[in-house]
Image (tube, rainbow, N blue to C red; front, side, top):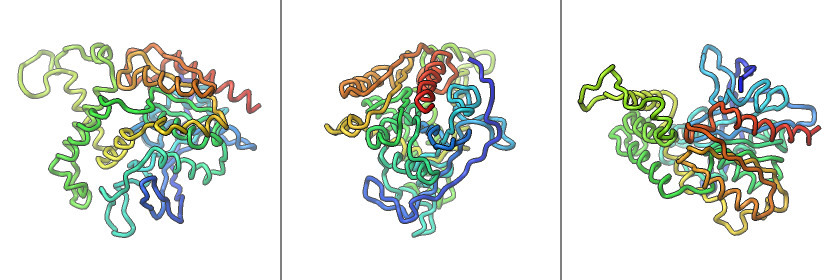
Length: 376
């Protein structure tokens, strides 16, 4: 599937919402919330063609197009744009940086107005419902009462699920890719090791590293390296690297000798320039505690106001395997919620939801085409 166009040069905007304070699920009140967001396409007269994009763990508001002077497209540029699966000639697309993030939305690296210093670990622990509450606040700021669809992969898909359970009146369709309704012990373990790498870095300073003028770079890069291993399949690693030597031939030592080692080192170092260690702690912890169907009444609102679901998993995704998606499907179908499910063949592991796979994109487009027919 080719990409016939781009949304072009875009800018990230910032909106201040909850001027009278935002109280998190944990009971802590933030004096306000700043939200970084981008929009693509045109909102129609009836405000009925809006689609909300929820990003994954290390994503941000820049989902499509290009920033001025930057040749790197947005993280979902292959999916969003004129003529693409999420067609911006038809849809008005909104994507925001999540609460607790580090790309313009209020988070632990933000300055606490009460102290004049970054929040650090004084920032409140967050819940998936807090993410949704802030998304809804931005929607009200933009004058959008109902979305034709809310879309997300991985952590983004978890946000979509929470939104549909808590406020089904806000959306007609929910599109969830490579996600989970609750993490397994193995998934929690991976995140725990990443957090420990950050918190045991001598430059962490009990979360006050910004005030100390340091960054726990070693810990954060190791956390990213570990996580990245889980995002690809064994087949993908084998195809990309095999056992090839970084320098042409192997020369046994404790440095970087294999090409895959160099790749992971690069991923870890590049991550330092765009992500904050505190956000990594906070966002992974939200994922750990997420358990969408733990409350026996979790589906009650959705039963009363059904949303149409599309769920997609990928054959080689072992981080959030197809069984994670099937569990969501079982709960939805048990509640008689209209649900479509597809497992897509892919060799690229968890990262498949970010890639341009023809069957995957065609499925997304077909689901949204039906939504467009309903609007018409």
